[in-house]
Image (cartoon, rainbow, N blue to C red):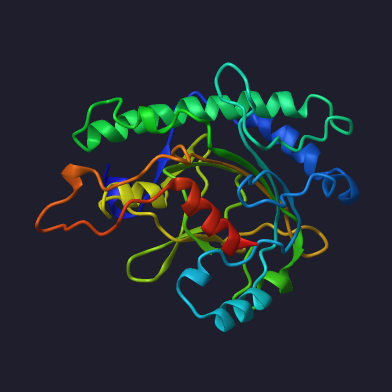
Length: 303
């Protein structure tokens, strides 16, 4: 629990979950021609599935904190230097039918959808194990969270930060992914050894989250902070130029790949502060929240 209640981040080792195969498919997808990738756009905030090209995602938390003019100025200055593909659950024995379908390039990349489904379900299994451990750490029954995560409203995100000239990332304020918190309960982050992920401390400083071979970076999201009445931290993080970057012969920073699994409570459930996280010394800070409404609000601010 210490990692979640202090920085909101921790490393998980010996999980038994390897991203190796998912990485191979991810690289194949992002190597497709842009014309092919843009046939599968992420164009619906409620669905949150499909491809987003370079610079489409902006500073995600800004509109929750600043005025509209300041937000638009910041977005124009600091577009994120990445492309991504969002994947949701597929209907079947495990998950119910959804109004939206995944955008798989089945013709251009046969087998891609099947491989992503396998990895999605493996991440979900690990996510359930983490929630069970968290429940016990909070003094709850082991299965306390179980009824809140039955619909498969999670998102698997493939990320590609293309090779960029050093001069681009060395500009003041330039980032590969802007400062943000995650929307759901927990995030499983699989990062390559390039580095560049940073976490914001309570003092406002940025600390490097150095890659650890074989480790998954786990961080808490907004829903877990709301559920625990701020006992667990949903911490701002970003991706910048790697601290000890190895550049290519042309002087560019190398490409970076990562995969994130964003676990969410079922969208229509009502989230309230857990009773034993509220006290006279820690009064309740948040009203009832529907996770789906929160996610759509945050996504609408992101694109």
